[in-house]
View 1 (spheres, rainbow over the protein chains, first blue to last red):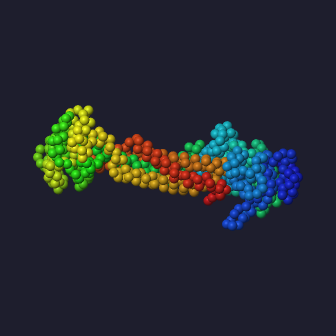
View 2: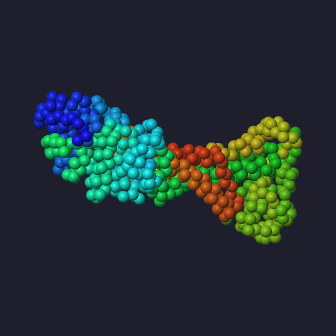
View 3: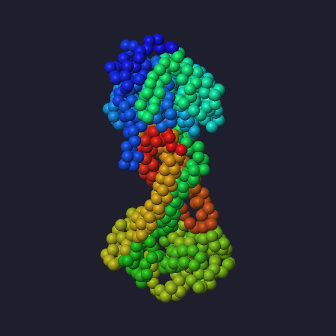
Length: 254
Length: 365
């Protein structure tokens, strides 16, 4: 376990045991924290709760896997903590900023500087090369193209020889590595991964998971990953389970 | 980076891009060509009137800028009164007659005084008008009608002898004897127009003042003024026609761009979600689509200019007497109009894209 000191979730933040299921570092402010987080979707005249009061915390440098059956709210949780969707109730603190209090434009600004996303379907821009897909994240970030950071990241992910290829010319594993490079190129505080190995074979899954672990251990990248893959959780510091829109437990992976 | 994004997006769907460029090209061509045709014809007509060499024109009171449109010929004896005026060197009466068979053209009925005013024709072939059935053509009309000296030419149900081919640029493209045309049109001793040449150009105003004094019910114009009036705004209905054609062109361009950008936005819904997940805000999304539309439009404008010149070359080959004036001013105007239409056509799709929910966009299939 890379993160040396952990404490039971019940002792974190004074939250009730039933609500605070995560394991957190001692005496360090969480980089991500949700309190009584609700997300309601409207289906016609009916409101369907996707998240039902989630309490969740992630420490800086921690890697957390979120598991649970389909439809339990994992992806919704990821979208809300990533600022892609707004919370219906509760608080979402990302590096001390409450997303629930922010407008869409403010969440977008925060997402640009503090959050990186990796998706199951890679979601690379099909018209751009690997280089373009990574560089556009730097461009949107606003600091312009940083060749040094670009070189470090692409080398770390083993993409040097594939930079001028379009997504359609790359394997799934390569595409996902490009997506990871794009997600971390701006040094986000948190990397959110939505089933990043869901579309990969075992070999490529292992490569991607190993890279995520490497990012976490070597660069201290905070990672929250949603996965269905039971083997994937062994790469993470902690795994939490979700069911019916709530986190039902939180156990150390090892 | 934005340039690369836009450029690669355009290349991603080459057929759609090609059709978009072509549509904008046709929009630009339609504007440039229609304006070029109208202004070309007017400018060419003005140039030919100027080429007569007269200083002043006298027309009936109801005459408009387009000569030959008036059905009120003037008595030819006016010539004698004009000739008596101080500073008048020569007066040439002309009877104008429209011929609409085999193309619309204005035929000049002239007599020897026309040479006095114009300084005479430059003959490329043949000789001047001598007999009552003689006919002169300018070189462009001869080329267009494939006529040569010595041939017969049917005009106004009358057989004429082509006796000379002259250099173009003096009033009309076809000239016949005044007396014969008067007989054929039932306008004996009438003229539609008098060209007046002053002894010196500086006397033009003085002569015009005298003419207005003795002929108060007639239209007296300096040829220079007439030339300046030959614009579409001074031709009844022509301006409306040009505006209607420009509006039609704008509508075509706007609808094509709208459709292109709308389908682009639908097709790239997931990409828009990706950009939003990377932190792209609404102005970025709108800007990307506007740039793409503007780039498409720019290529369309270039294509449109090329198409305009190609269309002009094709038309002039088939109709050598036509004049199509493609000016930088109207190329720029057409480009501006196309760009305005393109931006207008992109606003709604761009707004839709910028408002799209990021999560929905990311899960779009």
